Length: 211
Image 1 (cartoon, rainbow, N blue to C red):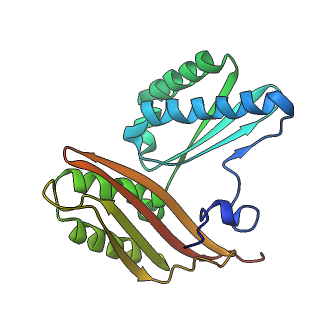
Image 2: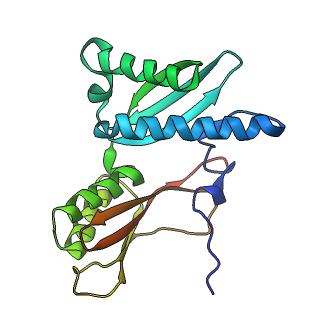
């Protein structure tokens, strides 16, 4: 039986940093963790069109700092910051705390595992051949400077008349046991009329120096 672990959790403190940075004791830990879930769910629902690549949360004594990394910052900021103010107001009402929402642009979306996975999901929903989608996407990622990429799709891939199966495409090198390896990993899900398809993406960006 295979022994598997999460690619990001496996590297925490070595080549990856925590997505939520705060400290709490006892019952306060549960309430704080649940509040983080609400923040992530709210932004994923209300800022999905901006292309969210990552979301980090930092807590201080008086306020919560949320760092939203997106591929289209103009969408989430809006004209004159109007959309950003609406999101901040929604978060403040949700948690009854002061929220500092910071938007950062992702310069190369093709090197973000989450954005690559969402691109695969979008093309599958358009009924494009899955094997071709995976190959074209992997080549696009490699052309933007990645050291390696791995894409796995699992589910009913060929329509309602087929059985569940698994397809994998690997380009370049994707080390799975090197802690210094900077792996950008993400999972996405495609909901089709004939079943659910899971998409996993590993993007290898090279080794982290000084670790």
